[in-house]
Image (tube, rainbow, N blue to C red; front, side):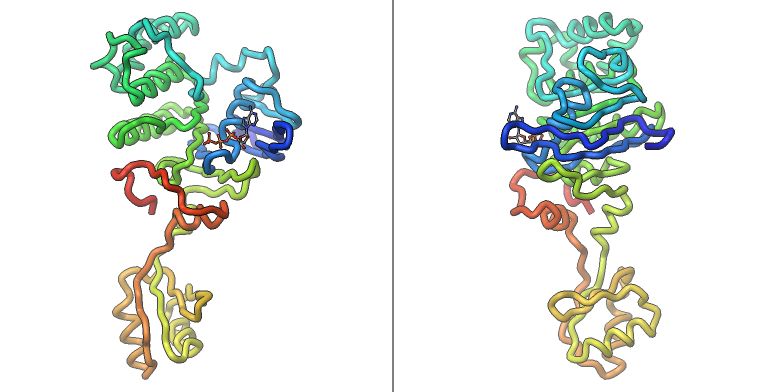
Length: 317
Ligand code: ATP
């Protein structure tokens, strides 16, 4: 835990009878960062978030937010925390503006904040519509607006991209980026969509079966999707020494007897000239890129996830 720590968990554990939903989780989320909490369905994300917010009690372990230990009945820290959890629901018979205004008054935030939140979440066209009549995407926007209303220092968001259309996902992504960069807001967000966190998060924790499998920053994650040139040749050892001797410093053996030459983007022709020029019989030369999604699936040991962010999300790489 550092001076910059905003959310810390220590050996946080939650057991439901035979299900170990969260298993000795140590998190350290720092001021001003966007932390992406990534895991497949059932990995333990929601359970963790509920414990962060004091909505359920841990079986063991501790949570602290902004230096205050979260315990049941303790609410003072929440003056500085905004959150979005699945169960967050608005008053269905009140309009968007009325819902926000009630919340604003409860938190003592100034009157201008309601319009500010409406603007930030693009809710102006539906501001006078009853919350119960909103589309799922606009309900999600309203929930996000409520989370932001009191200008919190920390935002804890469970699957904020849920139900948003591709344009909405991009808008929310930009909003969160601005909040973190301009206002120093710390964002802890869960997602089961790799592309979502790969685009946005500064740091990513991958949770599976309640355990933190890996923690990486964005650069490290993207490094998992490095570009390389795959080579197969009759004499692979000679190909390897030729490449290493010609300034290709990052050459790895593939499991299937091929060579992978990294940091060689756009250098396939040069590689071909080098090897063929040295009399090597080249049987394959393919520019490729590691697949982030495949990496995530390999790490979490599963089959392909059928749900994707949206066509507009494209590749995470
Ligand atoms: P999803 O993306 O599907 O919401 P998640 O990563 O948020 O998944 P959790 O909802 O935290 O996962 O669930 C983790 C595990 O704990 C799952 O096996 C789930 O079935 C179990 N679980 C969660 N809540 C309860 C509960 N109240 N009682 C019993 N088991 C539970």
